[in-house]
Amino acid sequence: MADICMGFEVHQPFRLNRHFEPDPKLKKKDLFDRYFDSLNKEVLLRVADKCYNPATQLILEKLDDGNFACSFSLSGTLIEQLERWSKDTLELFNQAARHKNCEVIGQTYYHSIASCFTDKTEFREQVRLHSDLMYEQFRVRPTIFENTEFTFNNDIAATIKSMDFSAIYTEGVDRILAGRSPNHIYACRDIPVLLRNTTLSDDIAFRFANPSWERYPLTADTYAGWVAASPGDIVNVFLDYETFGEHFWKETGIFDFLRALPDELATRNTTFRLPSDVVAAHPPSGTLDVRESISWADLEKDTSAWMGNDRQKTAFHAIQNARPYAVDKPLWRYLQTSDHFYYMASKYGTCGEVHAYFSHHDADEAFRTFMKVLSHMEGRTIKVMKNRKSAKTLRVLPPEQAFHFAGPAGFIGHTAYSLDQFEELLHIVPKDSIQHHVARKDFIHWISDVLEDQRLAESITGLAERHEIIMAVRQRRELLWSHIR
Image (tube, rainbow, N blue to C red; front, side):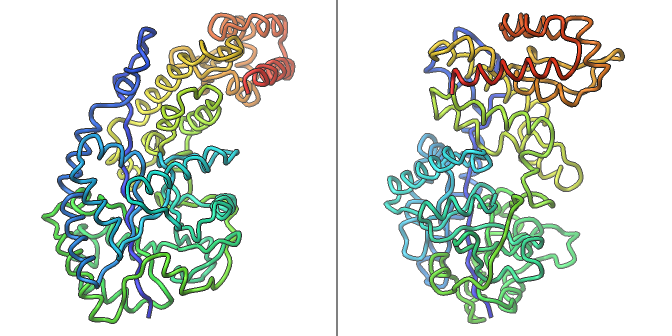
């Protein structure tokens, strides 16, 4: 018979301002309010009223009863919003975090995609920033780690191991288990791994109030029976905290379910355990080799929720390459929050419905807004960089200045938002598109007028073959990057 380990991810992003328009006169002190949406306060207060306050008050009661234990993973951006707009709610989390039956676990401060960067330096820094914040707020330093949306692979495991965490959470994905149960501790790169039980977690997170579900309605008695009957050492149930009251309103009975669950499990001799206690009690029963990234997102359980289409990949590479422009590191890091990329998804079916539920604008608008804000941030920074000319040529462009590849019949669906992406697309666009633009001297005009690099414009003048243009662009681009890195 397995025990249960229950955890909650609590996060709110600073959503980008859908109506942002670049303004060269914008002052530094006004950037945050112009980049980010006033909707953030409205959402935070609504979720606090419907979820955070009633759910945490309920959990505090259960923690005192002694039959319940849980963990919280609270993002730095959530803490910042609570400090601004709902200090009473933050105090409730403070009481929970300091309770002997509760454990605070680590994540990235900005709930970011930094772990997907090739260089893990930024990822490490955000993990440290989060740990410092947890100590400042709650006087605890996490020893268990939960990466953004459970994103995980061998490199992430090794990085977290090197930072002296004692274990890391991820999703109990079938393809990494190879028929084994998620209800055991495993090891990856010498760090213990706690695997989320996908079925039992999603029975609450997604199916609880679904009347078409064959097992609806879900009661605490029924669910406790499922957990108690589960073989293994530990059932890890990990949920978005907003499940309680926000995703499923009070009227669905979700709070009644949570209130009754600890007693129902106690009658079945199933005990709530904290993750650090689980790791101490159970040595790994096997190893995991996770070469391709996994997560808890969507049906695919990979990183396609954030990097699955061309828009998302463009934005991801743009934010990663923006490091030299990050004079104001917090602004750069707010733009790394995974939600911005999640909103750009173009999925269909149930996954598409979930993305649409969480987004405050459509995918194309989310992408355009992101690129406008990032471009504006980089543009403001150029004037204080050592090599301004190189920085200007390499900067990310807003949508209206990007290069749109076309052919004789019109736009062919490829757009370059930077010189880096321009070179990348030169490899794959059809030959007739190259010929079309060479004949019209479009490459020369864009490089000269938009990127303002006369030397590169001159070097490709007269070139007609794809490989010649690529070579000229690559040599110039690499030289320019050497000036600012």
